[in-house]
Structures are given as C-alpha cells and as structure tokens.
Length: 282
Image (cartoon, rainbow, N blue to C red; front, side):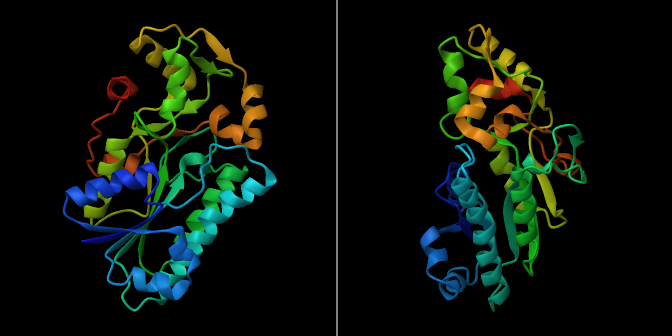
C-alpha cells in the first residue's frame, strides 16, 4: 500500500509514518514545497497513491493575532483546496482521502457524537467547517477525522500541561468545569488503521477516548498519580493575555463520544484517563 501524508513532519504524522513503515507500507511526505511548486508537481507526487492523509496546518497553540489567524486558516483551507484539486485532476486517483479536522467544530454546551449538528460559531469552528467542506469536494472516498487533544509523553500538548504539576504548581484552569476530551497517541494511530481497513467506513469520525472528563477532574487524576497537590487555580484571564482569542482552546472544551469507532468494535487500549496517565508520567 502506498500512502502520502501532508503534515508528516508533525508529531502525529511522524507516529503514523513509523507505524505504516512497520506494517510494510510505502510512505512519503507531501511537503509545503510540493504545494508551492504547483498543481502538476503535486499530481505527479500522488500518482498511483492508494491513500492520502491530510494533516497539514499551522500550530493552534499560539497567540491569535489577526495575521496569525490568517496563517491558521490558509494553512488548512488553502492547502486542502490545492490537494483536492490535484486529486480531482489526476488520472490515477487515490482510493481514499483522510483529512484532519478537530472537535473544536462542536459547541461546549452539548454532548457530541458524529451526527451532532450543535456546532460552535467561533473562529476555530469556522476553520473546521471550511476545512471539512474543502476536503469533501474530493471526487473520491473521503473520511473526516475530528481530532480531540492527542496525548503523548514527549510531543503535543501534554508536556506543557504536565510541567506545572511536576513542580507542585498544578491545578484547574478557570472554573475547571470545561470539558476535556482526549485520546492517547497509540489509540489514535490504531484507530486510523482501523478506519483504513474498514470497507464500510463512515464519512466522519470523532477521534477521542470514550470517557471525557472535566479540566478539574483531569487535574485531580494527574496530581494524585504523581503525588503532588493541585491547589493552584489559573484564572482564565492569564490565558487570554497569553493567547488572545486563541485562549478558547484551553478555557473551553467539548464533550465528545467516538460513537462510530465504538459501534464498529474498535477497542481503546487507553479508555480512561487513569490508564492513560500511566505511560505519560513514567
């Protein structure tokens, strides 16, 4: 099987590449330079490819200035548009496009499975809606992957989340009532492989562990595991100062269920946060 990955240099892309190589697949990266060289070059790169996994996008966890909001938007929507155009014009189309999105598309008030239409109206949700719409223009079988917070010991959000707890300064953020939906990196990789192997696959999947919890509950589980108190309460305004509008990624959250994976019999190795904390804090 031949698989092309855009955003392969990111931590999810790297982990997927390692797993695909382990399984004997041929994997190659679609870099930013491939997109810059023009459509014809991209068409040649994806020629005879079985699957394309589209993960490209600038990091969310930065201050959202007006200029950076454009970077966030363009790095996802325009890149996906160029990729889809190349797919549609190719004479040797891939069998499947898997395109990233995020659970940030959902509002923070309701519980969401994949058929939920209770979407938020903020900037992050707008990115997700437009991102998905561009991917769905592909004239091949397309799957949307709505990522929750992906937990890994060395990469992604967790090392920054863990640092204050490690030094006894951990605690909840704001009220602590905001939902925290997450998935361990190994389960994420295995879920994507499960979807690839499922010929009866759906169009949209929530990539999240089955049991969400609140920010306060997460702080309590993590602090108990490492025997550190979690007395500190970081006010929301601190994150608004640091990240501006982007603070919603931290101060708001979504309660998400991966119903389609569960219905298809996918087994999460790290179903609870208690089990997930174990490899994260070793």
